[in-house]
Length: 332
Ligand SMILES: [Zn+2]
Image 1: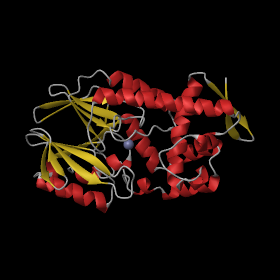
Image 2: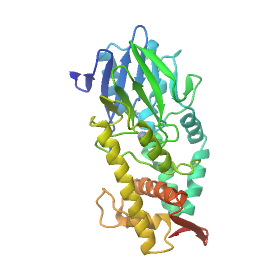
Image 3: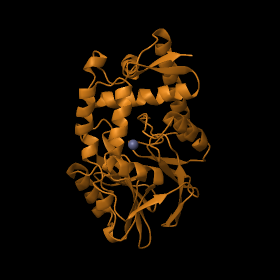
Image 4: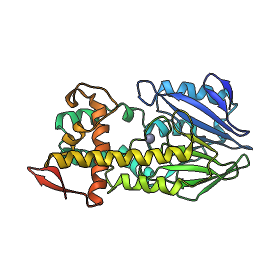
């Protein structure tokens, strides 16, 4: 990998990496990848729709002699750090690719249907009402999100192929981190653009989604399905690369441990709600107590806990019942 500029690297003949800072976000930065072909370009992931992402991305694209009029954008998934600038970066007559399920979710985020569904779920799981409303109205990720889905958006599905710069990129559908999460596989060179499905220095957040029964199950199935690709170079959505298979095994073990931890908490104390169970789980964020946990992070933590509870429930390991309008959990 050759460094070409402050935040730009050349990876192979046709593949470049632009690091886009995510200021104030624990992820720190996102990797945007540019693939240059003959008269056509594909930009994979973009950063938030805000100045502090837009400027470094445009600077990197300029350094690479990239031209908007011939540029398509591929979003590995709906999250705004990956899709926020897609409309600005894609040429006016070009396309913006995203999996159909994430495109549907993006529309439901824009018309507030998703907000209502998540609000309903989180209230039922014991999340404090005032805090929930505040977080939903002030989430910084929402502010950097796409403002609209225009006619350039094109749904992709598993197996679709993009031919560009002599590369043949195949869409690998890996639901879990989002309902329509995708990776791109270049078989000839053994290169996998992993999006947020496989990250090396961070554990991808697996949360509960409104219309997904068991997101963690989807994610674990995805990990098993992609584990045996002969990947020589993994290009992740955030931070650095690493040993692909070893990392997948570590992620599988991580979730197994988390499932056991959640189950142990439920076994020790019957009748807790998800919000209370989350408070008893161990988190990387250091705070004196669950009550001191940073507000927005509390939303992500409960979402992650819920994905594990949904999975235990589906596996028949725990039961859910309702008392005074709040869902509570006990082992079976
Ligand atoms: Zn993501």
